[in-house]
View 1 (cartoon, helix red, strand yellow):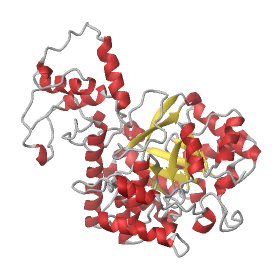
View 2 (cartoon, rainbow, N blue to C red):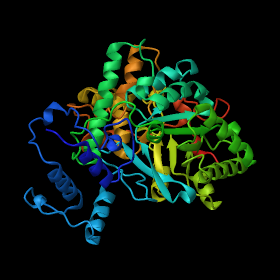
View 3 (cartoon, helix red, strand yellow):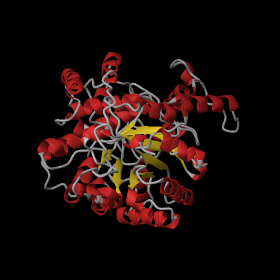
Length: 480
């Protein structure tokens, strides 16, 4: 089967997909000229169609004009005729596709069984526009600076385009090295010659699985036969637009002097070499009212000036969130929490949902430790064994289907950890030919594991240190 690249471009443009370059899921970088590239062998039995028929059929599928192949062969309307009804129908259809939203709208917390790779969140001046964040990213929490560059490079190879970084992680300058090579040249600009070929093949397959699944979910399978764009064809600007860099402002950087906060953020933009940040979040509420409010307001100013696209918070509970609202500030677009089936933060989630705030999950490696929720972990392990998944993959899949954004982490110290970078990515939990979808029954079992497992028991120090923890029942979301 041969499909003109021009057809793919027209269809993708028609449904207003984001220009995520270097990915088959976002085919805007396909050239309108030239012949079609190779397609997946499993589509070889599909009969050939003409460019005109494909355009008519694709347009009809999206706007509901044609209901059968015969009807799709009807004459196209004349160019000078403006069919307002068809335009409204197309807008309605586009708005109903998960992950595709009109300007200013946001999906918030919406459970979905098989979500597309992107979630729309609020952004821009006064939060009146929206940007798309990859639902599964990669966290640099507790990743040693001496391996941060390698981890970032492997994640890029696996198709990861969302990186969760922070001043406290101390690795932004190291991360900048592979990011610059990727932005300047593409994935081929990064040297993988010292990596195990088996690992690279796995990461490449993972990215391909993610690309294929992304196309299937975003376009309801319409573009599932499209070939990926040639490596490096998108250009630096396109590759930067395809990245999502989320940075956390450390507690010691919070200040009542907004200029100091703005300088702190700009210094991290310079360290990363990314021209702007897609999101900046207050790492925790563990300072005081004056510093929290003024720091958040300073980041909003950076957003309105174009240095930052969206503003979030981490570990904010009800009182900290209400404080922002009462002060008259724009609400954050996202609240990242120590969220797992063992601590669902139900009250905070309910408030965030009512106020159109998306939810992010941090890493959960500590859950399996000696002080972790042992009985609940056994149940999770049983589901993982049944599904032939790792426990981390089950947690990532659970968060994905709950409508959250998650940022798993893994270092590069061992072969298992290096492979885990790919396993926990969007492609890793949407492997071709594997059934990783959690059933309603399995989701119900996992949801029943909540025991309000507090941060004081978990032992993570992400936004706080030992002096902040007041005991086993301590949690940063309870602080005000």
